[in-house]
Length: 156
Image (cartoon, rainbow, N blue to C red; front, side):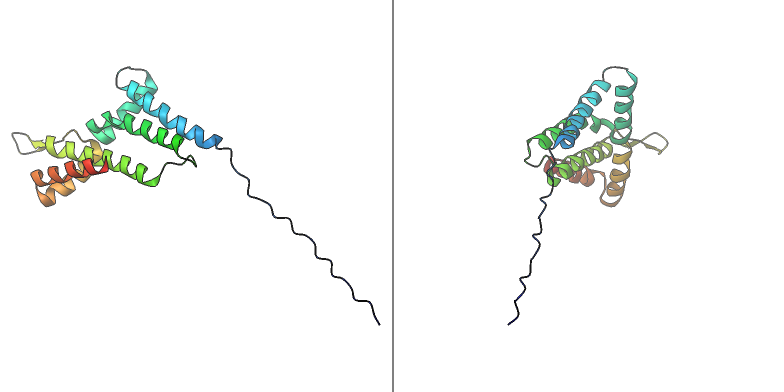
C-alpha cells in the first residue's frame, strides 16, 4: 500500500492594517484653530498675512466674516474631541451653511438702490450677493430675508 502524502498548507499571515497615530489629523485640527486666530487678529492688525486673510474672507462673506474665525475654531476643536479625529460631516456642513446663509441674509437686508435705480451692493460679500440675489429675485426681499434668517438659525 502506498503512503498517503500529507499536504502541507502554508500558513498565511494576516497583516493588520497599520493604524495611524493621528499625528497629521492633530496637525489639521491645530491648523484650523490657528487659522481662526490669525483671521480674528487680521481684523485688528495690519500685518500682511493676517490682514490679507481677513480681507479675502471679507471679500467672500462680507460682514459674515465676523463669525468665520469662530467657525474655524469650532471645527478645529470638534476635530480634536472626536474619537477618530475627523470633523463630523454634519458639523462641517452646518458651519459652512451658517456662513453662507448669514452672508446671504446680510446682503438681502442691506442691498438697496441708489437715487438712479442702480443696485448698491450689500454687506454679504460675493457669496451673499450670488445666493441672495438669486432668492430675492424669486421671492422678494422681505421673504428672502426671512428665509435666510431662519436657515442661518437652523444651520447654527
